[in-house]
Length: 173
Image (cartoon, rainbow, N blue to C red; front, side, top):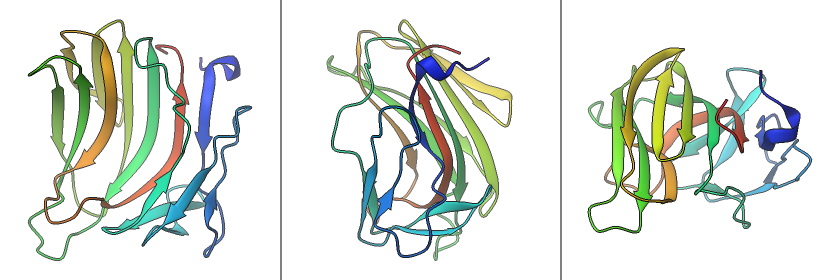
C-alpha cells in the first residue's frame, strides 16, 4: 500500500481550463507552471493536462532523489498525431553518467486510449507495467541521473498526449 509519507508529488491535473498552474497536492507543494500549448481538458478522472506538441508543465525544483528507490504512477493517453503514424509508442528512459549508460523501454499503445503506467526503481533495477501487466525491466549500469516518459515524436520537442493523476513516491512500492 502506498504511504502518504513517501508521496513526494501528487498532480491530479484537475484545474479548470485557462489555469496557468498545475497544483501539487502532496505535502511538498511542487506546483508546475504551464506554458506554450499545455492546457487542461477532460481527462481520465476529472480533468487532465493536454500537450499539443508545443507546451510544457515545469517544476523548477529537483524533487526526486534519482540514486534512491522511487515509483512513478501516471495515466497517459497518446493522442492521434496528424500524420497518423507517429506518436503510437510510449517510452520510459533512464539516463546515467556513463557513456552508453542510458536504458529505455518502449511499448506500443493505441492512440486516444488511456494507459496506466507504473515505473519502479529499486537500486539500479527498473521495471515498467502498463495496466497492471509487466512490460519489461532493465538494469542501469550506474547511478540514475534522469528519468522521462517519452512519446515517439520527432518533429516536436514535446508530447502530443494527455497526462492525468501523476504521483511520485520516494520508495519502491
